[in-house]
Image (cartoon, rainbow, N blue to C red; front, side, top):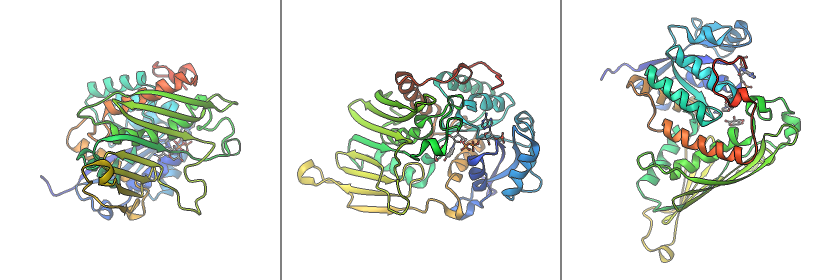
Length: 380
Ligand SMILES: NC(=O)C1=CN([C@@H]2O[C@H](COP(=O)(O)OP(=O)(O)OC[C@H]3O[C@@H](n4cnc5c(N)ncnc54)[C@H](OP(=O)(O)O)[C@@H]3O)[C@@H](O)[C@H]2O)C=CC1
Ligand SMILES: O=C1OC[C@@H](O)[C@H](O)[C@H]1O
């Protein structure tokens, strides 16, 4: 194998909040996180508003001066120097924009949730397969070294048999003041609501603990949904899942927060309970530490092989946000000719999305036809 790192050339589709954070991470030297086999180049950004907005975006991030700024997403996806498109538009637009990129022959990393519903995601899978392009949902949490270690610990059986998982990710609380009714968090036209934006992290931890791609289980779920009265999106959702006898409770809210006050240490919002003990994680989207608590052998039989311990990780080496771990995965998959990641595969994204579809429909949260539909292209 060549000792030169593989370079993945990125085109950034949209110039909002997360596009900035992600692109900043792409520009960090991978050796600061001890990664030497892949690297990233930001070669272009596209804005639906104006080329000048894309240029301001690139300039503000100190992107290379050679990076191109486009005033439309179509021009961006047609740039021959771009290998992969990062789709960072609101949920409502993921299907349309990911499809635009795939149809143009690009690999895609699509912000979470990958699409608004399973029907849309299945079509993207067909196109990615036909075009032989890599596609992944940007569930960045899965790629933190901490998360990889936790999943391995569970799959190695060190926690025993997993019986129950609790997972919460809740954020904000003054919804009226923070968002009003037209923000992407609250607008049905942008597929807003707590579940698709935040609850997906709670479900991600449930899936990391209980869904093994090698012996997959499609869980059954029951749920409670409270709607945000002015727009009808969900403001608080709780889901109870059954994975063949193992239970999970996944909660999310935009009325109360997992970390209500930054001045005080947050509690661990993820709790994974096995027959040999518990593993708790702080904090759902950007995990910083995990704690192991062995069950007492007197009460559970075989003793755990681990002691009580809290292990803390650097969640942003090189001064980053931690989004580069998922970018590194994309680079390795593209380099190796893979269409999907083994860490965040299509089937798992689809099963998780299927749970969210059921919860939303059951809770009476619907979005406009153009947002839920599969018609393409659509001028949203
Ligand atoms: N992984 C993570 O930690 C996070 C992920 N996210 C995800 O990223 C996505 C975007 O969120 P965020 O960056 O916060 O959103 P922003 O509102 O900050 O940015 C969205 C961008 O999308 C483009 N856009 C295209 N069409 C529309 C439209 N109709 N309405 C609004 N914007 C539009 C705009 O860019 P332009 O004008 O340049 O085309 C806009 O700046 C969501 O899917 C969200 O779930 C968000 C926050 C954190
Ligand atoms: O992915 C996310 O994580 C952090 C939240 O602030 C944001 O709304 C959400 O999209």
